[in-house]
Image 1 (cartoon, rainbow, N blue to C red):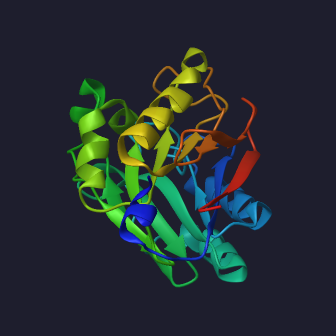
Image 2: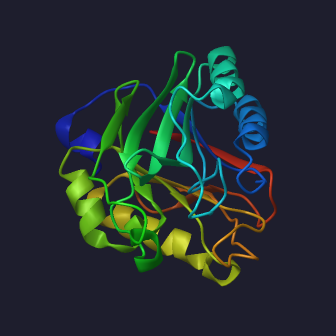
Length: 239
């Protein structure tokens, strides 16, 4: 039984997409244009992007402020399409964060909780967080967070209908997306969306997994990309 069924919550279905645009290291301006193109192509209410998608997985990247003018193309695309974009970037703290962008601008909504030791040299951990989109409560995660059942449990304790994550995984780790999504769905009765990096990036990730996906609350795969950059997968939560 999903949380919505358990509590009798009624809301319209939520269209969601996971995008894996190609990324130029440290080039926020160019990457923002690619993100904007993905938002326009996705045709979804929510579009989820990979971990540190605005800079690449570059642990020395400069934090991106919500009022950075380079984000303007994404804000414009969201305004034109009615989309909320969940974008990966280093943010103040510094944290490995998630920026939520819509037609009104950007805000920091999450910082990665479970840092890898190589990340903890520079970054500090955040806390579990949830955002509300059209009555849907979406729990947020970044990469390594998804490997810790306690992260999903603490997030679910805040009351969630979906669990969305941006990740960077190596080519041989593509199977982790489905494994972890099915576990979260089974444990908490929620939909899951994972946007995975595709193409080369920093941190030794010369070949990343791609294979972004969306899973139903019963663990069934609804949509999936290939390993190639610039692909988008779409589905609807709640149908």
